[in-house]
Length: 270
Image (tube, rainbow, N blue to C red; front, side, top):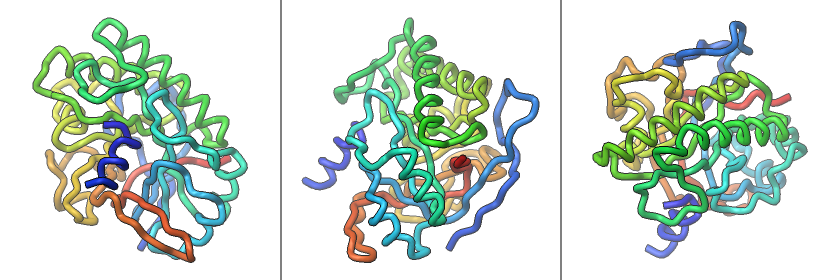
């Protein structure tokens, strides 16, 4: 289900920043010298439409230190009237860290309607073209090389081998293309399906080095409920979406957000 669709369905039914952390679990890196990773550790939120600058300033209370923003993709669910290079610069100057999220093509076996899907034959080419678009969108917003871009992959049937193989082909192509442009590979998915496919893939070549898993257990952690081998995605490479549809008011502004525990790269703002 798309991000917007999830919000419709839900409606109806302390922080530290570390610079210079290494690139974890990534292969075939194109660049020999990468900008230092900018890591944020603490609470983050994501919401379908980037809030206004006034709302972001009002929400800058210290509870959240980072916000995920949907920078592009044909399957992006909400309009982004606030998300401009000026907004990014202003929000960054107030202390917020930003997490770029791109809603690319979705799997052929996914049940929900999508504007763009890949097939086994188009997975590689679409992965590359989507990644080029993601880099262009991030760069236009002032998110510099060395920043991560998290690919949003909604749930699908991972037991469908042909579909799962197509997903891995698409993700590898997307991630390799990001790295060729000196952007870090990230992935948002569900612990029961899309994130599981990445974490449990036998061949790790060209898979993202940063995994943001949706597991709605209301536990603000990236370690105690980590569903897979504890040696995976270490060295500041994990995000955990632990609570959704949280309607919160701060400084007079009410926003419905998802809560995340974060210990992973964030955008480098230029």
